[in-house]
Every structure is written in C-alpha cells, then in structure tokens.
Length: 241
Image (cartoon, rainbow, N blue to C red; front, top):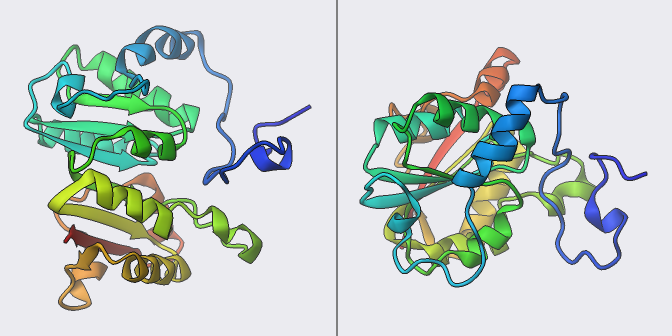
C-alpha cells in the first residue's frame, strides 16, 4: 500500500519530476472541514487547463490591480495577512498539504466575501508556474520551504535554478521575489542558485536587510518555531532584472 509519505519516483517509474514536498495529509478531517474541501475549495481553485486568462486579475471575484504568488503557504498566516492588507492585490496561494488548504478555505468562508482576492492551487507548484503567462506577477514568495537537509534529498529543494527560471519568466521586470529560510545551508543554496540563474538582484545593502524581518512580512508559525529553537531566519528580497 502506498502511504502519504511515499514519494512518486519511488513507486512510479514514469514519474519525471521530483516532488519538493513530503506528506499531503495530517489528521483526519472533521465533517465541517470535509465540507469545506468538497464544496468551498473548488470555488477557489484554479483550473490549469490552457490557456490562462489574458489578465490574471480576471481570476478573482474581487477587483484587483495586481497579482502575487505564494508557493507553499503552510498554515496560511502570511497569505491571509497579505490578502487582508492588500485588498486590491490578487493572491494565488499554492500548497499541497491538505491541512493548510483547510485553514485558508475556512478563513475565506468565514470572511463572507471579504477575501475575494484569494485563489488556490492545492498541488505541486511547477505545473502552476508553467501555466502562468509571461510577466504576469508583481511579487512572489517562497517562505521557509522544506530544507531537505540530507545530501541525497537536496535535489528536491524547491528553490533551484529551474524554479527560478520559471519565476523569472512569470515576474515582471522590477517585480519582487522574497525567500525566507531558517537553515543557513539552504540560505547559501538559495543565493548560489540566484547567482547562477542570473535574473534577480539581491536588494541587501547590509546584514540588517536580511536579518530583520520587514514590517510588511508577517511572521509564520514556521518562523516562530525556528526562533523558539534558537535558529535565526534569513529574510531575502530580490528584484527581477
């Protein structure tokens, strides 16, 4: 029997992409949560059949002027904060973990129409990135992704030259990419990948620019855990050249 912890290429020889995440389910859903996943999540979910709309703003029920992307929103704290603070920005949230989808779907349902600037993709980010039009996003976030610390698993790390190439394609010139991690080795890995890909400029002028979280970058539960355990996060911001 295949468990949620099993990775695709370990069971399916036809799988051609390494998955950048592990399990997809946590505890069993309550009846209300199951209702949200069955009946509400589909109304928020993107349909990745081609072609995408000429203007991504058309994806949202609210009127928005720009569209941002968060890959791996976890518990949704950052995604929901950005959506509430920026009502004229459409937020596309990508998260394969079911518990995170439940949290954001619950928040949208309870907002009674006030979070019409959120759309979701509950699966791997790479098909979504390939679907998005060129130069269609004003900002992207990858915050505290799975570090895959074992050397044999590092090829699964989400932040890679391949992912950065796709992000460079879908971000407009001057758009911002934010990367966060509490793992020093992954921070170095991110900076090396950024340098090799070549489409982004790091905005840091000194250590404070990546050691201090900006005021418009709310704390997530993963960051809070890292701080409790004595790890210092890196908050890195890059501009699309």
